Length: 126
Length: 499
Image 1 (cartoon, rainbow over the protein chains, first blue to last red):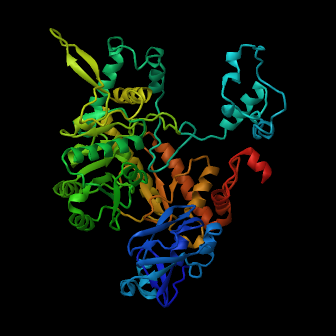
Image 2 (tube, chains in turn red, yellow):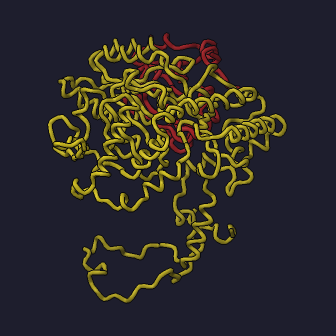
Image 3 (cartoon, helix red, strand yellow):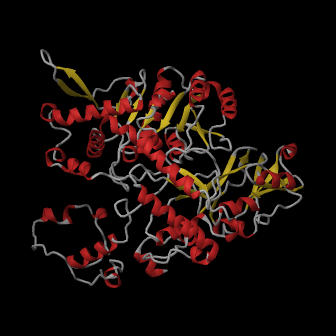
């Protein structure tokens, strides 16, 4: 069964945000990796790229489907998880420990529009 | 058959120096590579397999036995409409008097071929409710691109150059956003409701937000879930009011053939996949055909050449001409000559074989077959959307999720029973999508046999899930490691030797 980690913020399109001061680690939820199945490729932006909340910043490809990654927050990419270039399966192994990009937040108030773990779990159950 | 021997790779059958032919020693310099500039010449001989002809024939004949086509058995590949290709169509298309023609021969010498071309344009226009049809596009996706280019060209001709956004439902076939992107349009996704139809509220909001940027909307109706969009005329009115044009993806036209027409639903442009709706073979990358129809007012944008008919003086006979003139409106040429004429002939023969009355049965029979399968399987398989479907139905895997048997496992197990797998994990609206499209060609007996096997697999999932999870067991190659193949593809024999 899918795990829902407390303390994170979640979007409707199944990305999570782990807040760390002015920075946000963005990844996909455990529910999302379950639904996608074995992930074979992660298309990531580059450092210094700008991402905008609600807009695509990359894609995850699994044996079932390719799915766009939608930014849950706006800001500047300060780091991408390079380990995913060779080991995209890390997301399947532990989605919450495997962030995809680290973003310097442009507008922390955007976090208010995201769901907490309980609300997100209810969203997935719909 | 000797799979052990001839089933090997052709490279493994190779013996140095072995040939299937012998050419005379040829001293003619024009027949050698000596006149090629050095940078175009190979430094080393190509590493091709060396075999005698009989070995090659046996190898490929054995290989062909691993194939599965609609002529081998039931092929319920949803969304692909794998209907039977009648033999008479193939015979007519292979007729030497037609197949030997050349597109550059004078029009007086090929009036019959042009008459067929012209008649097919008119028949497709009538069946789709469009004013004019071009047969030039060489495949369904080529038709999509052509249709979108017509829309772009029309907006530009009106001075509406800001219209660059194409609305596409999130349930659409992947070709829709791809074609729009290739055409230089920006894709805007329209959400679906839980029943799989378009969220009209979201569409209204997008139209309000985008205003004069709306180029149009692409839709498949019935949609990828096999559901007819009940609000289609409202949707068309909304898009038209915003200044956009409606594009009909003809992928699912088979379901409606003879029942209703894209033109009557409010579509301005549509493409037709002759291989789906009119029973020409799926090309497998070979020749296809994707005619495009347009409503009155858009016909000047269509690509050239066009075949036109004019009345001969003092006679009722028609004379067919090729209009190849470049003018300000036309898209110009989108491919070689007239498109794939052989494919058109097969569709033409199919339509004439059925006739105007019988062609009306295609959509209803395809719909009946799909609903029959749906009703009989919904005890074991989870039906996410209730109600009647059109030509295809979608299940969300087994009802009983506790067995751990997935849609992939079911699809693999079907191969053991001699069936082609249905479409799986599409559409993306459900996690375990399993999409079945029987088509109108199949008999009650075939459907019953398939349904029995689907029930048997569900029973196996309950009794012995490992049997299903490790399937297929009887195919030449067992369960393929998709992940390894996607991450570390080995595409050549020489690469395999190194690995």
